[in-house]
Image (tube, rainbow, N blue to C red):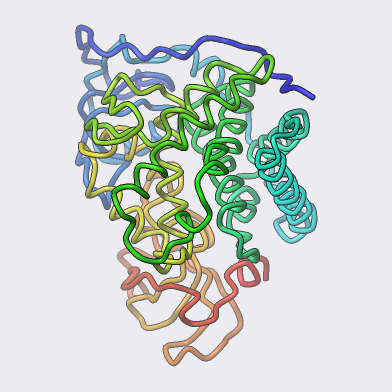
Amino acid sequence: MYCAFPRHGAVSIPRRSMFQRIKGNELKPGMFVVSHGLGTFSSPLVRVGELVVDQAGIDAIMQNGIDHVLIDPSKSAPALAAAQPGPAQAPTNLLKELPATRLLYSDALDYVKQFMEDVRRGTDINCGRATNLVERFVQNVLRNDTAAVTLFKLRGFDQYTYTHSINVSILAVLLGKHLGLDRHSLLDLGLAGLLHDAGKEFVPAHILNKPGKLTEKEFQAVKGHPLDGYNLLRKQRDMPVDVLRAVLEHHERHDGTGYPRGIRGDGIGMYSRILVLVDVYDALTSDRVYKKALPPANALNLMYQLRGQQFAVDDIENFIRCIGVFPMGSFVRLSGGEFGIVASTNNARPTKPEIKVVMDAKMRPQRPRVLDLEAMENTPQAQEIAEVLNPADYKIDVERFLCA
């Protein structure tokens, strides 16, 4: 079977233009704001150089007392305004969504295992099933971001090689939705994520699973997998050109230090830049043979420190805006001593999410209650996130608490 997505060209992003100053109330989704704010890790919504993709972004700018903004018309995407959804659908109940979510992840795991086995054996690749899975991923993300994040967090499986491909696909679709990509683009992006590491099947397992530092020869073998994956997939009929490019470029870096071609900046495709981000993020937040997983917030902080180097500044800031400074599911200690799970992110105030408190200061379980850190601000009950913890260190089942 062959992949059903038709071939289409890459999305181009213009880079230079005359700037234009407008009033804050004239700001619309799709406009690229050159200058309007802080641009710090703790406040990624208020930054220099941002494509405003939704009303939440506009509200964030206005909330900070901005009367005028400087926009770059050539970087703006007017189509985003027309593509904005109508009134948001009520989110599906997470507890009701979970069985179907588990089934989807399990089906995806079965497919990735079979795909890898087919590559090893040199047999025909079933891309039609990949298409179907990605369509289900996109439906999941479009229906409920919370359910999509839960899908990404289903790490009850130990096989990183397989789960990584699934997680990258889901995260790529999530970020693509945040950037205002249409459904067709999300399907291609999700397919690229699911197949991005196809070339790793040509790398000896003892190298991929080596707990120590790789030798130069071993690293050269690893560096060949993007090109190997590209060459494998381009033989498939109707494989979208954007998918092939993203598979080839998912280890390139903004400063040109990546591989296989060492390209930099604008030379890296848009889908590729998305895969670069989500690939690194999932790797950092996953247990590997040579390292423990980082908590999501710590991983984002590390990636943010590499802005302008491995990642374009606007790319990493858009990613942080998408999943939050403290992503949903983060296990945290509050300034009052209690422990909780980030239950909902806050687009306008990224450091003020909703927290589902599940333990007292002595880590004794208690009846869950939700605290809105923004609503509590400037009250005697005000609290801050004091520390981000690794739930695995405390045997915390984040999924169970989120659905409680």
